[in-house]
Structure formats: C-alpha cells, structure tokens
Length: 272
Image 1 (spheres, rainbow, N blue to C red):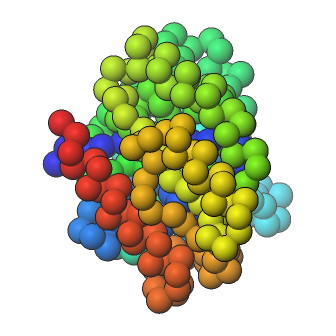
Image 2 (tube, rainbow, N blue to C red):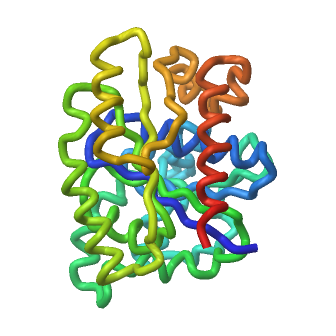
C-alpha cells in the first residue's frame, strides 16, 4: 500500500476546510480506502466533528474528579509518545476511518519547535512509521501559514484548498500558492500538485457565480468540477459527531461530497 498524504489548507477560516476533511475522508472509506485523519488544528474541530472526546476524566491525588487531554498530535510532536501508540490513533463510527486527535495544547508547539533541528520536518519524520498502513492520510490544518501548516505541507504529497464562494475568496491565495512553490523547491519535491474545491456554493446567487468564474480563470484545471453547496445538513452533522454520509446520506451535501471524492481520487490516480 502506497500512502498519499493530503494537506487540507486555507489561510482563511470558515471556508469548509474541516468539513471537507471529515467528509472526503469518510467518502474515501466508503469507496474502499483506509484513511487516517490527523487533526493539526489546535481548535480540534475535526476531533469533535468525528465524535472524539478531547479530555478524559480521572480521580486526582486529592480524591477529586479532574480532566486531562487524551493523547493527541501535540503529544507526538513534543516527543511525549510514539505515533504508533495504540491509545493515540482513535477509531470512529466508520470502520476504516481513524483519527489522531488535537487539543489546545498544540498551540504551544510553535514556540517549542523553535529550538528543534529541522523544525519544518518534525511531522514528516513522526508519521514515517504510518506509511504503508493507510491509503490516505488527511491533515486538517489551522487557518494560518504557521509552522504547523508548513510541517503539514512538507509531509504532504498533495494539497487540497477549499475556497468559499464569497467576495474575499481570493484574498491570501496568491501567498498560499507562493508558499507551496517555495516548500516544493526547498523542502518537499514530492509536493507536486494541488486541487481547489469550491465550497458553500449557491448557484442561484449571482455573486457566487461571479466568484466561481474568477476562481476558474485563476486556477484553470486545478479547480475541481464539483462544487459543494450550502446545505443545512452539512452544518448539523458535526454536532452529532458524524460525517454527512452517516448523518444523512440522501442530503445534497452527502451527494456533493461523494462526487467530490470520486473526482479527487480520479485526479490523484493520474499522478505518478
């Protein structure tokens, strides 16, 4: 099994990045792939969106109830545990879809990494033992060009950029593409391609149509044909800790992400 690593990135928040990560991962599993999601965002939305608790209760030395974070990606990056620790990689409701959780502790890793040798390559070295165990590893990145995001792109074989259909959609994307090119040139020659996915698209809105046309002009064939619509069921699913194909497989959101996943896999299959 050759593992492909996909960094899901956009410097803007609220563009459907985590929603895309969870639901493309779930659809990949439905299509016969084995998938691991690594929640690289300190907010931990992919973790909670798949119904994984970020903390566990225990009785402290004072005999009182207390809580502590579950083992998470911060524990790995800070050297606290090996990535193959059985308590780290958590199953989800879908057999074949697993996740390494995140926690707010991850926000501290930036300062800690400043003293690391080859600090941009901490993640790629950490996940090396997982290569060959999954078809895809999906990295849900924070909405910033941080050291966490840079580590994710250094580890990745491709990038998926969800872009919301709104007025400021293009803001920051030129800088993101520059960053991808720099990382490919100096740190990760395997990062050979990226895909752009339009999210929160309402075909009846003239603004959305105009934004989609501008993005298509800019990205050309990097833009995926599938567009993810505005859909209430998509917004509801994370509060139940489920991907959309488990929460409401007949919804337009589930159908859209199924098509997007089919298209993504077809694009990836054309790569060497």
